[in-house]
Every structure is written in structure tokens, then in C-alpha cells.
Image 1: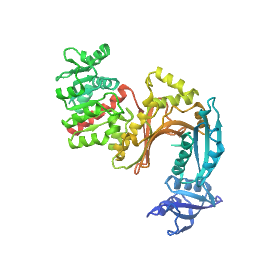
Image 2: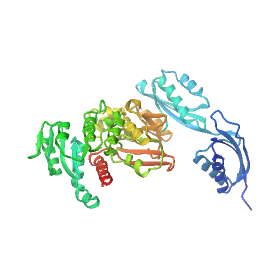
Image 3: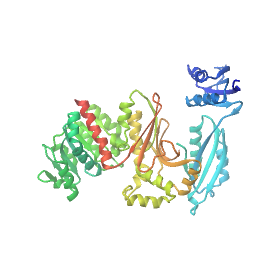
Image 4: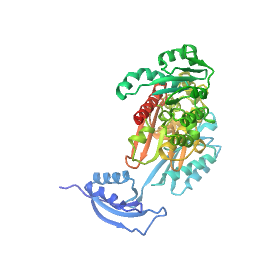
Length: 167
Length: 337
């Protein structure tokens, strides 16, 4: 008896350069998964100028997991899996007078960055209020990491915090 | 090769020591005969065309604190520029203390040497961070070699490594821990849960941090290295003022604890990328290449062909830094042969 085959619907985000689609498709067959459909419309672009491609693939679960990893490792963004937006976590630590500077306002500002949701926040008070620390975990759309980190830094700096972003 | 060392502090003495340790091997392996014709410190110089004895020089410095007390060949009161005028040499080792205000007197020493057709090896970050293009241009115009491996990361190979071993690769960005003192302090704080001030004191007692630790803890030293890497490895034309600099003096034990809960460490990271020149405390994953402890330095070069390449090594220390200077001397020799 063969293993149960799974199907996954993916949306990939490709750069509009020759060879990108092939790079994305190559590992699928190589790792032993089947490509069921590919919908590729070069004239439909995202606001970032990338081309979304819908792909349905079929295979064993372990193989499909490996396919996702290989595609992502090759620098191609997977933005949806089975209709669900893939998110990435961004962690930041702020040091400063967090409470005095209105915690709620800080969170509101962060939540207002496009494609960002504050998922978790942890506060550690110090004997010196200006040395309090806060860890904020943000969920963001894939592929916007650097831009979002820069915006977090701007918000934190405007409130006089030391912003410690991921590397 | 006739060598003139200007600056006889920790690095200069390390170079003299390494000359003694390696003299025979270098001669045997590379056919290079190192002849130390002059060494200078703030007291003056010791000059001998037939070659100084490095051991005697080190002993003299140790006992009297002055190279100008060197028996028979010591001369008191000479400036660096005087010495360069008086001595016949092939290669200048410029290792005077780093000055990040104006890069002097090292800048003038190096320019003079280059303009007179001499090769230059240095560990001196100040002039490189402030006037890199002036020095690189002078070297090119005079057709002399200008090497500065020891200026970034001490013994950690990075500049020659990128130029030679990674030649053909485009370097997209560089991220690294480029200052050993701050890495020591942050590693200790993470391990012991101690405060910044307390840990800095401990580092000072151990001689890891200087009495005035500003250059290290405020990120200035790392920022100099960011400038050197940006100019030499990524063809940027930038200077110290182009770097956004934040140090570690505001880091609290609370913030380190919060970071650890999510599997992160806080490290002082230098970033060289097309859209950012920055030194700042950053979160790095525990278990990642940046999670090095003690005074170690580390750098990851992101390249187009080789992907990520990471180097680790001792960022300071007399002999360690001298090892980078020695390798520069040998590579100049190989090139000239």
C-alpha cells in the first residue's frame, strides 16, 4: 500500500527575471513531488513589482515539507500555503522608560505599520524606570523584514528608547 | 626586507616578538630576510642599518620604557617624521596609537612613506576610518603596497581573505562582532546576570577594557572597522561620520534576560550593507555563528557565489594582531618577488 498523497496550494512570489519560475519548480520534481497545476500570469504584479505564482503540488508529507524548505532556502518567498498567509516573527527589545512613554501608544504605532501585528509583549521593570526593558514579538508578512525593522527603530527612537533589533 | 616600526606599544612589541619567533622559518619558507632597521616610540628611536636585535629591543623597552635607550643605536627626541627621513627602509609598519579625531600622526607617517615609494603595513584604524580613499589613492599613485589586515578583527582573517580567497565573489553585506571588549562584557552579563557597570569594572581589572573604555563600549572602535570594511571590501566611499553608532552602555541585565527567554543573545553588531552602515546592539540567535563568547570576533560575509561565509578569530592581543601584520609583510614580499 502506498503512502497517502497530500496536496498543497502554494502562492510564491517571484522576481520578474528569466529563470525564476524554473528555479522554483526544479526542486519539486527533483525531491519527488508532483506538480499538479501552475498558474503564472506575468502581467499581474504585486505592488513590490514581484509576480505571484500559484502552484499546486502533490506528494508525501515529508517530501512536501522538504520542498517548502528548499524553495525558501533558495530565496523565493512563499506567501501563502493552502490559502493561509505565511507570517514571520520579528523580535525586538526596547530599553528605556517604557511605561512613562505610554505603552499603549507604542503598541498602537507598531500595529499601524502595514502588514504588522504585535503578537506578544513582555515587560521587565527595573529599579531605575529609565532602564526598563520590553520584548515585543511581531508577526509580519513574509519578505518585509528589513523595512519593518527600520520602522520599529524609528518609532522606538522617537520615544527615546534604545531599540535592539534582530541581526 | 628592511623594516621600520613606528609605534612600540602592545602591537609594535608583538611584531618584534613575532620577528624573533619566526625569523628562521620565514627565511627558509619564503626566502624573506626580515631586517628590523628602526623602531620608534614617543621617546625617540633605535636605528641600526645592519638590523636591531628584536630581543634586546624588547628588553630595553621593558626595563626603561623607551626604545631610545637601546644600547649604542638609541636616539632620543626624534619624531616619527624625522625617523622616516633618516632611515633607509623598504616597508613601514605603522602601529602608533589609534586616533579617531584626525588620524594623526599615523596618516602623515603613511603618506610620507608612500610618497617616498615605501610599502606600508598598518593596524591603525583611525586614519583608515577617516581618510581611507586618500591613503588608497596615494598607494596606487606611488605604486606601493598598502596592507591593513590587522586593523579589523586582529587575527581574524577578513580583508585579505575576502580579496584573495573570495576573489570573484561580490560581497553583498557584512555583519560582525568587531570589538572584543564589548563582546566580553555582553557575554559575561549574559552568563552571570551582572550589571553593565559591574562587568565593565571586572573587564578593566582584567585588562580587557581600558581605563577610558569609551572607544570600545560606545561602539566607536567597531564603527572604524565598519568603515574600513565598507571601503575596502564593498567599494564604498565612506568615512566615520557615515556610520550610525550606538554602544552597549545602556544594556541592562533585564533586557538580556528578556532576550534569552526567546532564545536570543544581545551582541554589538557592525553592519555593512548598501542601505546601512551601523554599529548597534542586536539580537542574535543562541547557537548561531554570532553566538561567540569572550573576546572573540566574528564576521559573516554574504556573497553572491559562495553564499554566507563566516570567519572567527581573536580580535585583539599583541601576538595575535602581530600575526596579521606578519602575514601582510609576507604577502608584500611574495608580490614583489
